Length: 126
Image 1 (cartoon, one colour):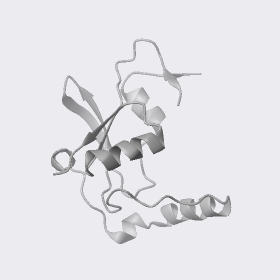
Image 2 (cartoon, one colour; image 1 turned 135 degrees about the vertical axis):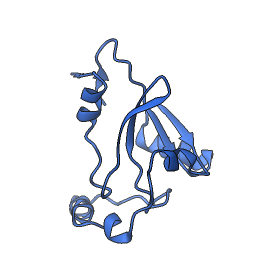
Image 3 (cartoon, helix red, strand yellow; image 1 turned 60 degrees about the vertical axis):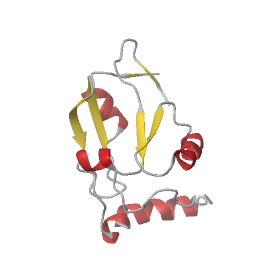
Image 4 (cartoon, rainbow, N blue to C red; image 1 turned 180 degrees about the vertical axis):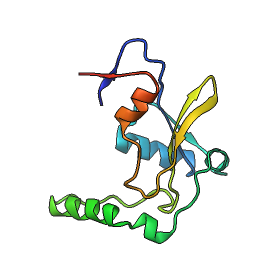
């Protein structure tokens, strides 16, 4: 992960709806450098409009292509620890208020980190 430019007002927070212990294991597996919150009742998800997907969205052609490419490289896919139909999303907050958020149409339709950083007024270094 790249280091952010000096003075960048962005912190990283991930949110899942599993209990804290499985989320801690997921954060460790991902090497997540920020805070990981447990939202077991999915209150934050609902407030941000992050709903559950239909199976055709979860297993979209783009997602299946990513799985096939990983398998072709000999990479074994980990078992999901979260609800595979929960689409999630990305949001920018300022002083606890959402100023912009992105909702994916499929799992492979996430906003690129560079776009998040640009929207936050930050540029990666290195």
